[in-house]
Image 1 (cartoon, rainbow, N blue to C red):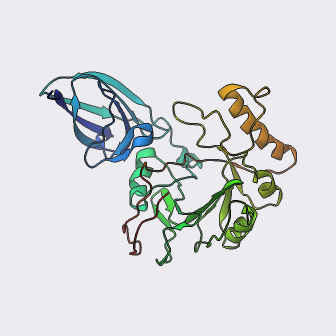
Image 2 (image 1 turned 180 degrees about the vertical axis):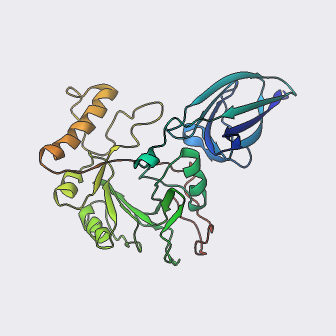
Image 3 (image 1 turned 90 degrees about the vertical axis):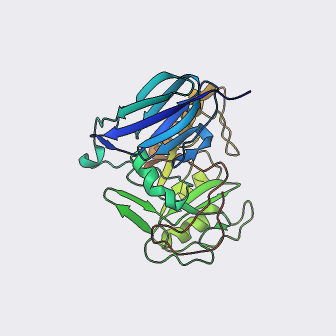
Length: 312
């Protein structure tokens, strides 16, 4: 049977000019599609665009949602695709507040995305800060490569690090941001404890984050002063749902903290225990975006040439 299709042509503008944004499309057949030249993210079925795209779609009702971070109004629309016809749509994004001008900067502190995509992704999501994890356990993108001096790449009010490291093992995960050089991990599931790597990161001047408060080693890491921030807003809190479990961390008492709301209250209670002990540790937020097939790095933006790929 021949697929009956039409063509969707979309322009996304800000002040009359094309602008990067995130797009969610719901087609009549429920399939996921990413237009040529856009950056796909299959895990929650969106893609990012630089402001214009053309895409063949099956006939029938189609819905589109366009976003550019939290400081722009969301655009939602629906229309019918018709066979062999071009459906053209032009959308204008409107910023309702500019927090950076008030001294507040948006960020995502848990990012597994290819370095060459970062500048575009930060524009599409309107992020100011995003340290990019290029070393995860023993998978080291920089092995055999020279890091050089440019550990942070910035443009205007946006900056992303190119050398951050994550230790994710039996005790959970901690992350070190803006390292001078990777710390070689020679570890089993439990030894050495995460605090050992956290201390080595801090000696390089790195900021260290406890990725979630319910990880088994979190209380030790915080008590020993190796942690600068804690991921209260973490990747269990997803766009359309809450992951109602603590993975391999410390399970909550579900009689006291039932359901998805209980997951959130437990995370908040764990955080407030530190505050009640006089440990004034900031909250951080990380979405853990990672491509479906893993991270593939390539030379871009003046970064050193290298061999192979790093995957997560």
